[in-house]
Image 1: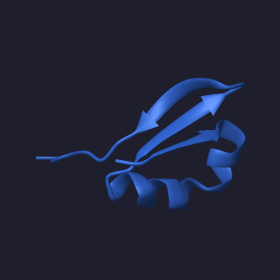
Image 2: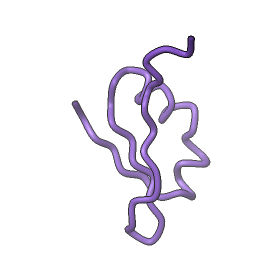
Image 3: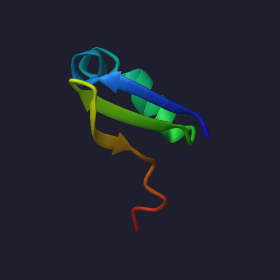
Length: 47
């Protein structure tokens, strides 16, 4: 699994790309001032 860390301001500009990465199984961490805030992950099943 690959990890990508992006600042919140960049994440806003790259949301579509980051969602695609997460859906492909990559770990996407959104950070602010170098501190991790959230992780995007694929939902296994909605039902």
